[in-house]
Length: 120
Image 1 (tube, rainbow, N blue to C red):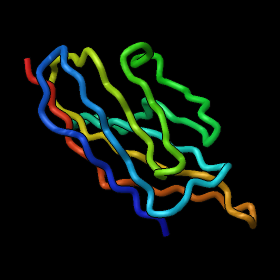
Image 2 (image 1 turned 180 degrees about the horizontal axis):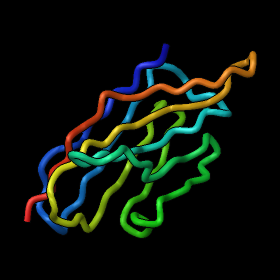
Image 3 (image 1 turned 180 degrees about the vertical axis):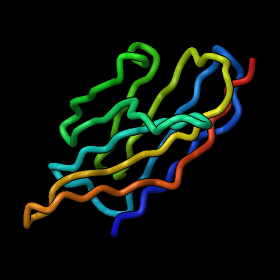
């Protein structure tokens, strides 16, 4: 079992920035992919970005240019830098870690989520 602990969310003014962190309770394996998801009230959870252990990042089209995902494998941590935040309510950001174990079985672990609110 892997625990993912998120931090860095909160209230920010429109146009401001937030940096979310997600620390894993074990070392990052070479085939682990870590990502960030966002869920607004009444909407489905959607992926905004993910990153491989080698640092290859992918972004949802809706966030390209405004969000940057990065990771520090030595700290078992993935980050999400959010700039130029737009007003419009709140969302919960979740991080996840997924990969394949030695037997070929896929695994997915989720953080508990952190609230982010952008005020106008």
